[in-house]
Length: 400
Ligand SMILES: Cc1cc2nc3c(=O)[nH]c(=O)nc-3n(C[C@H](O)[C@H](O)[C@H](O)COP(=O)(O)O)c2cc1C
Image (cartoon, rainbow, N blue to C red; front, side):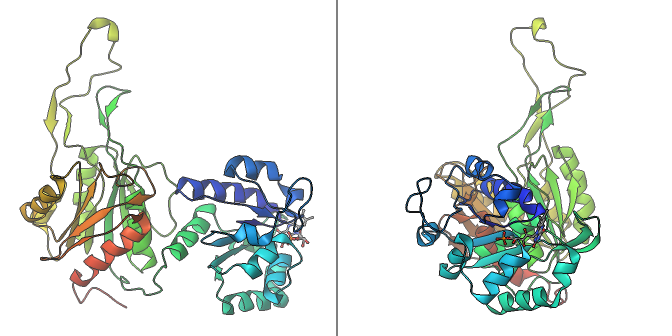
């Protein structure tokens, strides 16, 4: 990640943190001017890696070299990208460590410009941006809004989560096809929490990452996406509508309400199978008993209920199982609930299912199809799941 000299440089700390939360390792290179805005110590503390600032090694960074920096990296991001660095990149100048890295880098490059409106609208900048585009650089357009100099107009750095979404999309080899244009996709995500009393709950380890990845992938393929989410602590994506549903009952109500308006439902949320029959008023007092028995009752099977109500919707369910017998159970779940596709993941497999950035899934269906995928990022899994579901969408629905 390259950081250049502008007021928005502090926002790249957020970009770095979100990238890390998504499971990426990040090495930072700063221009000398960037260091006037944010100290390299912040980036090295957060990234846990040395920050590159000098083209030539010195006592501080012996042997530091643009080719070493590039070694083993999958993608280069410049955020914020100043008008000056953009101009150097466009002309092929390589006077800084960052621009030398750019010229020597063979992977995909994402650039998020930030500058005042006059600089952004200047024909020289427009020319340089066009050159970068023609050179295959992925641009994250700056937003319009109030800038640091008090002016209102285009030039403000895109939001950190938008920048990260662009990086994820490029990493996933994001299809430029918009094969879900006009398709309304409903995704449930996260894990429900069932209250025991006013402050305690029964929950599960679902982070919402898989649902978030599905929603972003569907959006990028042109779909109109709604996410019914339970307790997900991840940044919300632009261009996606969110409905909060923290409990199994709320998830049931929201999914029922949204279902008639969707063309594809992907039930990815970990919805509690059981909930306390009644939550105690206030906070249970531990001094009243040595042991506590909480009576639990079954919750509604949302997917099975919606499958019975379906019109022409495509239905995709998830089966998080544990252990070798799980695949067979997942196959059974698909036929029993009459859904088109069940995505099986085995929580016992290293790197699969909950919390992490990757998943290991088997896509069961449609029909007799069954595909066991190797470990890959959740975004890549999402693309494969959408690839499997897309042909089932009613032909008249897709507008592209
Ligand atoms: C307070 C201040 C804020 C600046 N903000 C920006 C900015 O947002 N975008 C930009 O392109 N240049 C900005 N500049 C100008 C750049 O810092 C200058 O062009 C510098 O040469 C960029 O160097 P670099 O591309 O090597 O980081 C700013 C300068 C100052 C003094």
